[in-house]
Length: 475
Ligand code: SAH
Ligand code: SF4
Image (cartoon, rainbow, N blue to C red; front, side, top):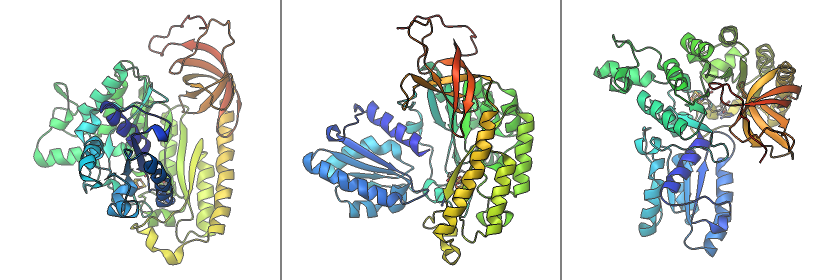
């Protein structure tokens, strides 16, 4: 989400006439887009601001913007501690960055933070693609979060859950597809409850304008508001040119059969599910207010795996939540082993100011104990990741080519439908095959590690809708 906010700020500035540079000495504007979900974002921020002060001493015209959730949380504090900052902008008014830069030229430092989540039409009407992957785009479908996980600062800095209008999202994906995007990732903190707020509001007001798509309703005639996320997956997948649809992050407690059915039935919805577990102990899950038990989590996972052939499952797990005992941690290891994840983001618990868990100081876990548990979890996760990856050996996978590998000369990197990274040798010069970033190709998987696959190029294909070979010479 934070990465996508950076893309959108960049798009706004480009629209305003700026262009991007890698050289800070050349820059007229530097934007630091912060994220305070874990670790010491503030230490990093003030370190970076220290370096930028020296740059600004050399170039008085340089303007510095601090955006993101740390800005939302610390507000005036930032301008006080770093008086050379020009603009501090919160998470709800990012589209104001260009105007605030202009204002600060006339009036000095400006701090503008709004309290409420809002769907900022100006911001969302911009299509922001990724500079390095122009054929793959993030699309925000919802901002904020209505849950209250005890460890999490997101609801405090991103506000309440607000969904974008259905038709606006479809229109954005149509625009992206026209620009050559073939893969979209729908983003929301609680993405599978997309539309819940819209339904409540429609029932209250009796107005259904947020559910229209062109001249029809995406709900049935009786206005019975079905789960909109699954409808959204289907509509977005039906857009001409869109070949791959992904989404993140769904909440296990809210995953519905309709979403699983859409994943199973719609070719474009990829066979990949990020399914954040957080912990395997029911006692800890209850303290976290996650709304499911380990058994429930595993049952939902089994249902998804049964319905969706060849489903890859990834997760997030926190180690060292306050009061976590050896027994609690053993439960996490057991559930992780049973779930057999394709990969996992594992985090050391980090107390976030203002959250419920941060007050449980008497129950904080010794950092050495956490580190030992963290290392043990990694072994379990890497074991299942390797197993899952080895299962791919010998298969021919359709991949979306991302471009030449950053690490290895002569090698291309691509993603399988399960979102696994695969490296394969580029076609030899003289070959009739030319591969460009954004092409689709068939690759036979030849070997596996816990984090990526290796393979051999079999064929280059146009997006599967055309199913034809591209005969182009090596240029
Ligand atoms: N909405 C998503 C989570 C977004 S935050 C969900 O509910 O799954 C991404 C991940 O960061 C979380 O899944 C969690 O594992 C981790 N995280 C959030 N707050 C944390 C904290 N205080 N300490 C450690 N990890 C944290
Ligand atoms: Fe944070 Fe929980 Fe909301 Fe995810 S669902 S953003 S972890 S409060």
